[in-house]
Image 1 (tube, rainbow, N blue to C red):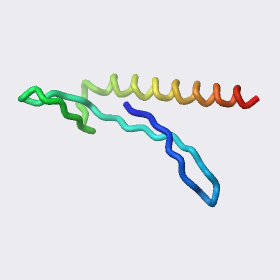
Image 2: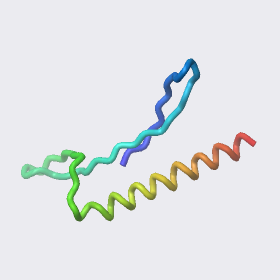
Image 3: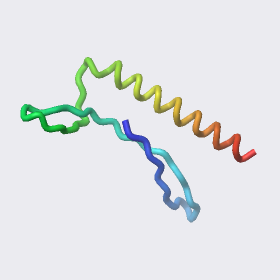
Length: 70
């Protein structure tokens, strides 16, 4: 799971928004690393945990930023 901020302009205003990418890493038959956006049924609990952790991180980060603005 990778999380990053994007900055862009929307209706003439600078806007920052957060996006994320979920990929699965694996080793092929030759032992070389690769990645894919395809998942197995057994990955579902891991995906759920990753998304929950991302949510916690982003909401805590937002809360910290709001506290720093006060």
